[in-house]
Length: 85
Image (cartoon, rainbow, N blue to C red; front, side):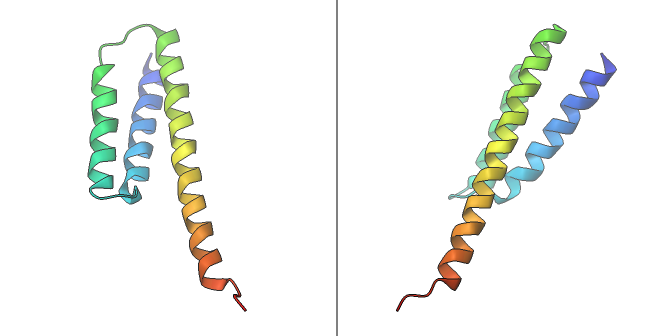
């Protein structure tokens, strides 16, 4: 159980870290609050299978946010260095 706990805490910290650059007006604060609320909704979960499923869902969310940031950076670079003749 302590392994799952450490994985949950690690995922929480990672998602909070990813939320610092979330786009939009009040994006970072809103994203971090939503992550906090999602974790608090499941704080009393005891079933290891359910916890593993929630961890998988959280990792999926992290990958989606990372992809969003990569796309944002790609578009920015493309806009700066595109040749419009």
